[in-house]
Length: 206
Length: 222
Image (cartoon, rainbow over all chains, first blue to last red; front, top):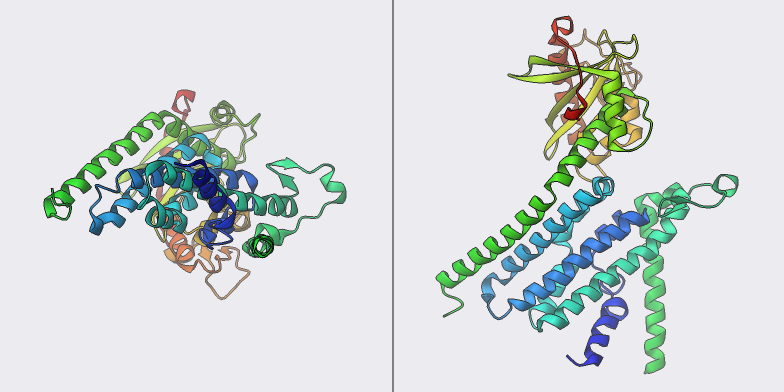
């Protein structure tokens, strides 16, 4: 695989074709888990783990998979990786699992994973597919982190569980930031900002 | 071999299922001790919280110690339909508070909880949940303090018919001492909880507490 291709795949997954603000995929979990950074990081880990390995596996099997059952096979592969990551989070981070557990299960239906398996991994060799999955997972996680680092301090006055300095003296929590509307506002702001930056860059290059 | 032949398709899917089934089983097997320990910790935490026991720290040993130093346990046969039910009682003070697990069908799956009552079983002290699979953001809000705190000190109206001894969101009198607000948008979860909680309270009431043989809890059980 030429180095240029690898760079391009990564740049597309992270920025140009970012699954959240460009393809508008994975929005449900992006809204649900971003009120705490710790939850966001674990959800991101789950999605990166699943997109990377499912892309790689789908690609490895692409020449052996009968076309008419390819989507069933993809769902089976994705579901297996999701179950593995669900068990791992339940074992090592049970408190966080109590909150994000239902959303971890929903990674199976996350459009990013199925979308990349169908659009990229089914047509490309294993290593580029693995990179594509990794980049898309990272792109999703970066957007979620950008939302969470605003929502958690504004909503709870903490960051990664650590209280902001002298919070009680100057801080009043914005409850709306903990609730779903706060996620909608932040997602819209991040999408607007990222898209306007990308459009400006594109205009300059053309 | 023709990739579209039924035999190939069946063989391919069977191999895929076998491979990934084995993979998931191996991950589960490798973490089973950790999962069991987490399950025990959650169980002990819920009991400590429901009885409002004093805890020295946050470690599993701290929760286990709080239980062994404050609670005794008995097995009430025939108190859970045809099965038995564990009954916990405080012995570190004179309150004689009782704690019992309860369970029933929610909207999606079983909801398992723990309820503490005063010695006369007239009032609920606290109600907590071990686990449930209700819809996140809707039915799952049954474990939010805003909902749970309503049960603190709630009177059970034993004179009312069985399904109305504790009211969740129903009844004309919003200020009734046996009523809590339901969860908006989670009517099915609220109704299911109301139904099975009342059924379970009826079974709990039938237990002859004085006839039970309470014993101190061995910390190896926790």
